[in-house]
Image (cartoon, rainbow, N blue to C red; front, side, top):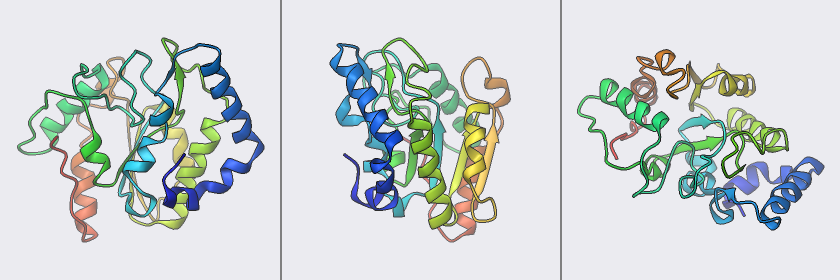
Length: 220
């Protein structure tokens, strides 16, 4: 179900009552004939792509995309061949301003970021088709709080990008003496004016380089 290093880090959560209730809820939605995104085999894709010990940046989303073919288990990412959603387009615009030479790609697959240690994590990791927030308050928030808390406690020097008030609330789980926390508005069209010019991608790379690490190659 989940990559081995993550199982070691947060596996105890799977045995707790809240998580068992969460599993029953999600599986019940699928069994009832509701289309649940992402597909079951992609639900934990963020963890498979970025093992616990290799995470260097966390980009926190809210919940998966709600339209068919979009959600792939990585926050903000869509498969190649699927039109980039507005929030992702705004991220690309910021990157073009932020990172010298960045060229806006013709796809929205962020897998290359994940393979460099960017954990693309949604606070709520599943959703019913067409209904944003439909799996909120079912237990995912508790699980992803645990993910963030374990990263904060067991690792050092991670960059956390928290966009919008929903994500900022998760920042309470982060030790800011051990990690860099970057906060701004969300890149959605409704709040992009508070996201534009945040320079988070540049600041993340500067922080990593100061700590003797390779910067993230944001080009896709």
